[in-house]
Image (cartoon, rainbow, N blue to C red; front, side, top):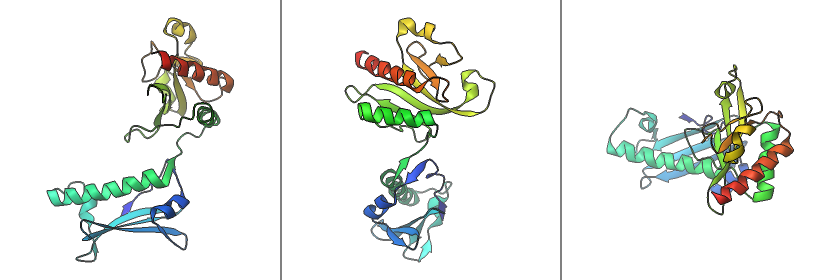
Length: 223
């Protein structure tokens, strides 16, 4: 049986969506049973507040097909079964839960501000980096902001504390005057000639951050 709690670690489970997706509620557990590989296998997913697990049953033996969770197991048949199983689980993650990575007050204010003003939601583009997300301009698909969780030492600060930051575009001709490495840094993981980084820890007033987001949005239209 596979423990799915890590996959749900940064997500909010939407139990109404689970029902719409096809889960059946039994006591406080939501259960989905889905046939696979021409009904020779059945994926069983159980989700509750306390646990999130899945297993694949081989219906010809009525036993769990454990090879699907053994990464060293190989062969075309096992690979095909594993691929179909992973697609089912990934579809459940995407359709029955929402990301909830950023917890700071200012990060939540930024997400709400962008949603209300530009009708944009965070996009989580990298499965290997689930704590990195971007805002994209719908008019030309260019990024105008990124939210990330990083160790504070990545900004040159002697600390291993994990912090939430925002990257935004800024005018190239003025960017060096803007960066002080105390409140504003050169863009983390971005082109430092065009991006700046701000900690979302109330070092800078949220209204100023909103102004910088608006400025970045406008720059994304012209570049």
